[in-house]
Image 1 (cartoon, rainbow, N blue to C red):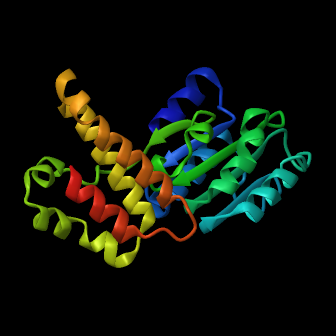
Image 2: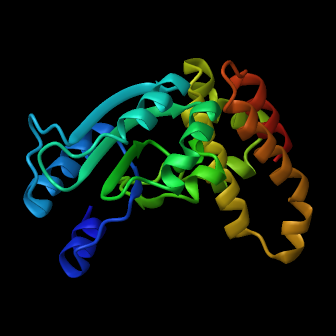
Image 3: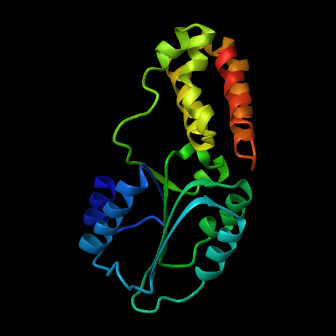
Length: 223
């Protein structure tokens, strides 16, 4: 949140759309506090502040957001939309592309998400991403990669058991970044097929009912 505070204090500027990456229960109170203390808006009973929380943000939610963003501010000059979700469907993301590409003037969107990997590249490119996670997950990826196949499968077992596609997407994103960071040019060429499989698996995980087990087992066995 410090990044937002500094930009606002020094430039009196807000981007039209942010993705705040972190745990909802921590990020949402911090964001509302920033709005009240720094921007000076009322966060309770304010008709120009719309806050919604979702497990999965779907196409119908996207259509509602598209419609209400056109409403004129009722009490002030700006409108604020704070939407938190654990997952967002591809259909909903495509529906929001135009909203974030050509927003209504003095309208600001804040998406609170657990990991930026749940966003399609086309939508993510329209957002200013701020990482507010306290600590990175999957920090022992080096150990994961040097483990036996059985140990790698054990590492991802909890994600599989919970069928948590959001964490599965986050895991694949962390694995991809680790491989890029750790590899030299020669290894990057050798990893090309692995990167393709990671991208393909992440794409499948954005479907409505993906097989988390099948996709993660496959990745764990080929890296």
